[in-house]
Image (cartoon, rainbow, N blue to C red):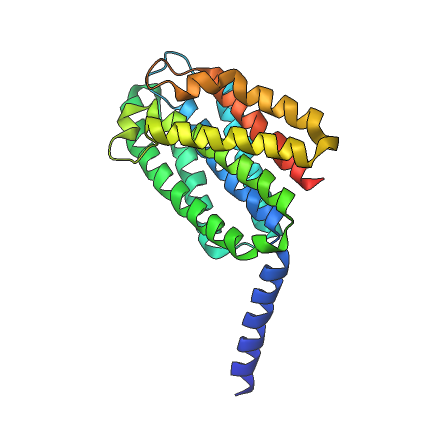
Length: 242
């Protein structure tokens, strides 16, 4: 009986510790970094590109490191931690594949994206449960970073046909709706946060610089999209954490 009570007490304690650690800010960062990890990985291992951009691989590992730090802060939530471990394993497999086996990239990337979607769903569910504890501005900044990160991941998937097959991507109309929402939110943020208007203006400029490329239904993959959108996501996260 005592042993059962002790087990129950330990379970309650672990749940309490996780709940206390599950800050809206950290969970918001997890969602953004998860999409950035997926986008950078797809960009680096895109077989349709003649040359790899090492910056994409560096960005992928930077996001992976940030996510591992977030998992430690959040108390290693099971669903997120397991999916992240699989993503890390698949990334290592992709990196170890010799150039002669590049045809295996799409197969492994499909598996990677499956785990990434599990990870995002778990993080988004957890965030929805605690975000009411954050103020409206923090929620707006989080929503903006999530939308930009999602837009980037969708862009990378669309430009990798072998991976996009069978996966739901945003239609032209959906992209236009999403970008309109992003633009309106930038206006609302600058109006409600005049002291941050300059910083928000710079972030908005990063987004608008590549907006037409993101909306284009065709065209070649542009490395600048990853650079500017990921920078905007990270800058919004930093602004939200102040």
